Image (cartoon, rainbow, N blue to C red; front, side, top):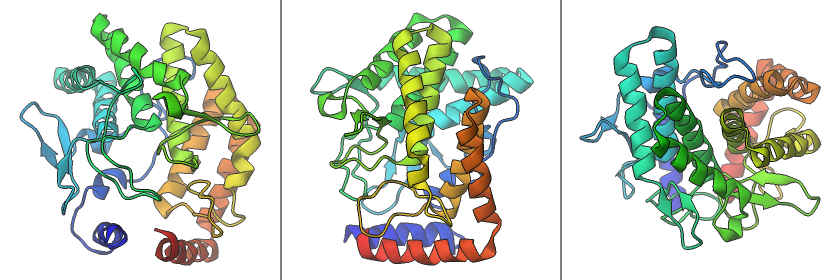
Length: 323
């Protein structure tokens, strides 16, 4: 049943004119040309369309995603943080008080909804089940949510000097110092490489876009606080990417994750484009040539009609067999 529900979601999002919760995500990934490396300013992607989300909001102005069916209307902390970051970017550009207010409203929600796990860590939970390789059973947390919440909160503290934001940011960062079995979001593989896990499953899948986004949250926290553990984690993440990016290259397309299945899970066209943008950001942040190398290579794949078609067919077969 879960597989059929998943396929129905994808069909609605990709093949019909109807809007779904996926519409929020699948805009065109873009690099924010306004961000400055080594400076906590505009976020690394613009999220402008997300700042003007046309879907549901609760009575306090917090965006909610409609997953329809059994899942229904839900708060998604990742979507909420991205809405906030989009409004922050627009506030930086325009100085509009309404954009600042929307951004700080999101920061307030993040402070109020940081919940304690059984391990004593504090996370933003997703309070709904989600079909993945293994079903993510509510409540579940994610390195991606932790990181983008961090990116909102350090900017909110910079803007207001309200210590509630920094206290919450400290709590969110703490999950990156703990492994997934201790209520954290970090996993160290057999080769000693450190990963931030978007989906916490066993064995881990190392979702690439979530890992890259999580790395930016760590970087933001370091930029703002100067925390040396954040600096170490960021450098370890760069090392992991340097040594593992080739493992996400299928020779004609990028991989979404390390699925551990006989057929590897390719990225969708959206996520392949997102990977390219994320690697361009990483190159600007670090100057590491490996990020430009793979961004250029994966861009060449995207420009090839033959490779795009091969990726689409391959991914469709994978989804039918495994998800």
